[in-house]
Length: 145
Image (cartoon, rainbow, N blue to C red):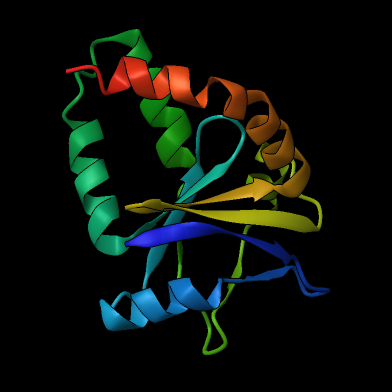
């Protein structure tokens, strides 16, 4: 559903415009509402409302008696915020989420099929630079059937 890598910047009012392709996909799939939360690897995860509900059901079924489950759910859900893009496709990301992802001004927005990831451009470049060399090895291990 969401694919590609796009370079954008936070505007003077603290808004981030979603890539045109993502706005097209959202419109075609009647997606009006998103949820953004703390992601992994120092990025933000952004889900459509439908996908968020699926993720929520999966995570809330984890046993609350296990410490790791409680810790994950606390951090993941306490960071979540509902976002409705304006008519120009701009969203306002709360400061605490920008702080978590080390986002200042320049961002890289990445489509990862069922979710969107929002990265500080510098953090994305570091992640990509460190990961691309092992891409084939990872593929071989994950796709070994």
